[in-house]
Image (spheres, rainbow, N blue to C red):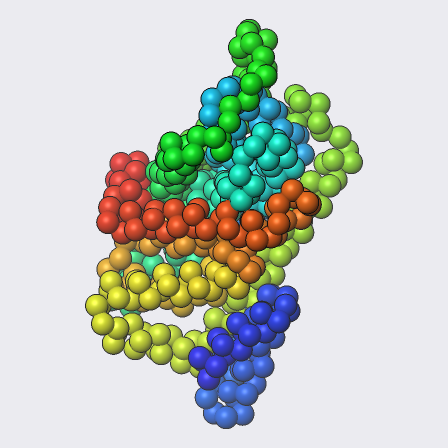
Length: 454
């Protein structure tokens, strides 16, 4: 029945029903069926109120609305537009320079806003017409913009890492208790932020190397922009005005977390206040704009917490139906031990990414498999970064890759859906290559947290 519950949820989600109500509704439906058949103890549902209270009272998850608020304010204050204009003017005089400016600005936006939809839409509106008009390949341009937009999933401070950090923290303690360790160690969101920093930069580097390879093979497809202004003092002042405010904000938020000065929630509140200051300095802060930002923040936060509540109901019923024991037996009998189990989990998450969003996978799949994998001796930070990179591909994989939808919505007649799908395939391969590199050299994810936190 546990397996049937999971399959039914995937089927109902594919039919287009809301995630939160699907998780909660199917969970309660199977709890009722299991009670009638004698496979489920209804007394387990008495734990539901305390579970839901724990979700809403979690101080770590308070960082979610604050980071969403920070990213939305920066989006409305036109930080991206000014950055793109300056970087395109700086790099555009070189072959492929416009693409490198997209990568650079996308990396900065990922570290400041972390909102995939906002980044892809902004880049699509501003960069895609310029790239295609300059003679760049439509499919490659679309793929580069979509891939750059997903950097917000892996480069901290990332909402995906905050949600993963909370789930993995509970899973790590659960795994240690199952091993008889009654004074368990913990893994924090700060650990994941530190662990994701180097892989995130490596991923941007791989994007650039792939672009350089294409420039070497077919330079005519990556023309330089002929009409460029002088790099005079006015240009450098304009560039500094566009670059320094978000860069200072990133250093304040991320630096305070990595150095242990502030918790992610405290740093997120500083980021929200700093974003308001930047919007005020750029004269983009109005009462109507602030109202739109707050409304958008409430919508995103409500969606996340409602899905988390639905996932709590699902996981309680799934465990009550014996699902946890089923997964444990599956992993125990897996050929190859922990390596075979890890490959299976990564393959399942990758395939689910074609039909589910990262939030559903984080709240539904990860709590089921992470305690067992961690009990087998895997490093929690390394596991978290591997899952985060894998989830990042879910934004690029058709048919339900959200980055593809965002770009298709703003691209209009510039590119076709087929060109977008063709363009993202190499970047999905690059993200899978990063997972391979992390498997060969786990230190890419574990070295920096060890240096900072010991």
